[in-house]
Image: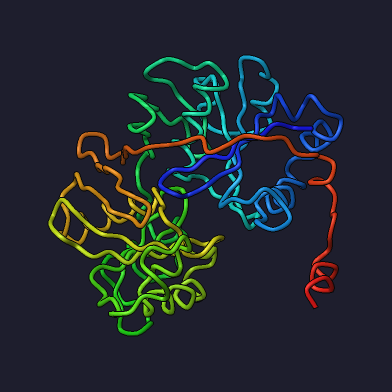
Length: 333
């Protein structure tokens, strides 16, 4: 049996597992030895809300002080400068270099489970080391690094070097595209429909979306201009320092919160001269404080993280193809 922790940041939820616990089992050793080929399927199994534990994403935490050999497995920049590393995988098995809500959860987990009690410490990520500033569980600041604005690196199929307040060939909408380690398409002040898909107090994030936003988002994600898919943000500006945000994530659809989406929105707002560099971003799950620094060009955000519950699961069943898609459909038919 392998221990796990269920965590959430503003309702964006994650399953967190330590590699030390994985390596303590034969199935875990086998999984780690073939990680590149098996990580996607493993994450999908763990994050499945019916047949697994259920989450928006999987976080795997590494304590380099105890498992220095795993530094080579990650192939991240600046790994040598960090005592802790993480791997993040979306709930649908797709990879992402960054997840802001997940990184705050990782920081809290490192404190609680690895004994990292420093006020400041680094976590190795695929984008390089991220400095963590821990004040308390309600105020964890993470450094997301510099935004990526070049179209081909986002990636985005566009003739212009940067895609700022430009038409996306969908419903006369204009957008600004930014990568924060994952691609974002930010749309400002699109008129929200008067009706929501469901009740405003629903636990289902999709139910709390304006009907037109919920209709637009999947169609925007399917556009050929986004070769790796895209997170779609609908931003309603309330002042230069305050914005309300609806996020439809690639990999999990409507979500209560997306920290990299909040960061991308502030960057896009500055580029469009609609927002200041320090902004409170209100999402369905709560608020984040986001700042795009003029000094070093990095985006930092502050917000909470929470451990919801913990438990154990049988790793061998998660690693195997316990049920094929056809078997699942047969049960439902």
